[in-house]
Image 1 (cartoon, rainbow, N blue to C red):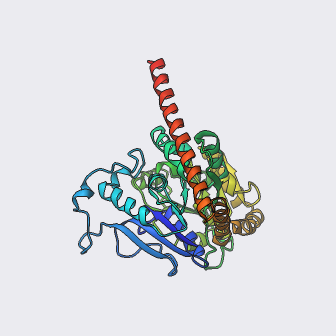
Image 2 (cartoon, rainbow, N blue to C red):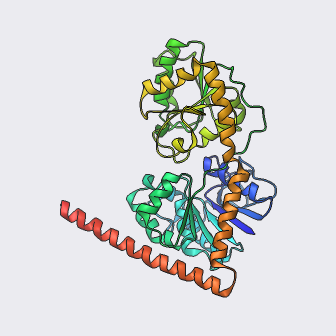
Amino acid sequence: MHISFLIHNGYGIGGTIRTTYNLASTLAEHHDVEVVSVFRHREEPVFAPSPKVRLRHLVDIRQGTPGYEGDHPDYRRPAKFFPASEGRYQQYSALTDRRIAEHLASVEADVVVGTRPGLNVHLARQTRRGPLRVGQEHLTLDSHSPQLRHELRGAYPRLDALTTTTEADARAYHTKMRLPGVHVEAVPNPVPAPALSPADGTAKWVVAAGRLAPVKRYDLLIKAFDKVRAERPDWRLRIYGGGKQKDKLRTLIDKLGLYNHVFLMGPASPIEPEWAKGSIGAVTSSLESFGMTIVEAMRCGLPVVSTDCPHGPGEIIDDGVDGRLVKVGSVPAIANGLLELINDDELRLRMADAALRDAERFDPTRIAERYESMFATLTARGGSTAAGRMRGTLHRTRGALLGGAYAVRDAGLSVLRKGHIA
């Protein structure tokens, strides 16, 4: 089977990139797999996929290279096809519109997989007849703006399948989006076993990792660790990652006098050796579409204390068995969760063993098997015969018509509501 992934920028840093390469590399053991990156901004990717995976790009924005296209006239014109309400819209252009359309019109693959909403819109509407069209959602439906949800409601019915990272988000798409004939399935992100020994649980370090962004609520973690320090001054906290909140968090650390207990370590790649230096993982987010860092920590032998935020943590952590789920936004709850594991060595080690065992379900081999099964089922539904292709075309046509009708209806209801409110 020939499988083609379409990704925003395979040369950057981010959870979607790692997830895509983990899955693509595993599938490449038995299939012909390529990753097509819309952009290329550096010579080599940060997270290199398996040598069996072909990586290519559509638009070269490496300044100072012979292929540089940043000064192309169409690169300076706004995109008209990529949804304007999508978070990455400002990076897209008339040039990306054209290159993506050309790629999808000629792609020679049995399955084409999109990896973000804007690319899924391209995929749904522009992929040539024949390949399975599979959209991946790495965020959540509820995190999309009303404008983007309206755009997706008109495009997603043309897909053959849509995957989410959690069961909760899959239910949201089933109940709120209405995708007639589209196979919607929750498939978690794959996380490989680290090539190092797991943590032994004796180091007096709590470890957190991720973007220094408001949604991660590291301010709450730092305040909670102030309470931890008061009871257990022998423990320390390391926070890995970069972002706009670095200066604000540094000020908070200094204000609380935690400069000898809380350390902003900056980005780390690979992150696995840093997890293994700790004994407890910490996640204090207000929202997690999945919770990649939770699984990474567990695969390194760390029980994780996490806020029970939507959507991922509650589907990853078995509360009281391989980690702890605590109240969202509560400094006392976070501190108490950490202290519970810090003060009970036997409990911490028992949870660490359970975390290692339970995290095996996220191994790339198991996740790839689920995708293979889904692809096989969808292929059987559509078939490779002329009749099968006709059924697939009818399915997409029906879905597109119903999706468009829903979108028009919803737009009308929105206008009526606004008029009623006015």
